Length: 202
Image (cartoon, rainbow, N blue to C red; front, side, top):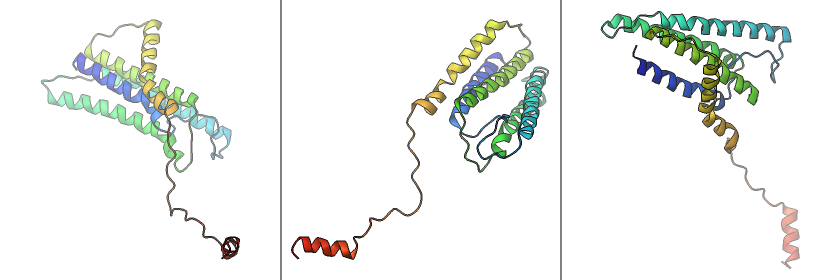
């Protein structure tokens, strides 16, 4: 895979995923604390959250060798299809896993606090980072990174999330119009009509 193609793919994916937690109200993480309307015992919530994050870590751990060891040759259409299939499989697995909590809480009025949105941004940062390391391994020039790389890249990822933050917290959102028949003005009663006529001498 060409380096420029991989870089642009990671950049576009980073822009989308950095803003996604602020653009949608559906939760993306199975967190252990209670939500409004969720009457399950705390033990079940903690177990669900533990399994969810174990699967999330496993996905991030295996996506790097999955993409990094895939052969990609422009002259071989079969290798291109296999590479794209592995890439699509990893992305679909991430989408299905991150859609689980929203699916389970469907029909419930859920509002995400800022802290939960920030956790989702950090999870997307880790997943996109592992995919980027997979592309780096596939191209053939992996480098060992220090803490400075993670500090700078995380700061850039948070900067990419700023438009979504502005949309969610700094812009005014009008309440949706209520559906149903419009309220009709109340008709004056007979007593009020007669009193009004009497006051005007009629």
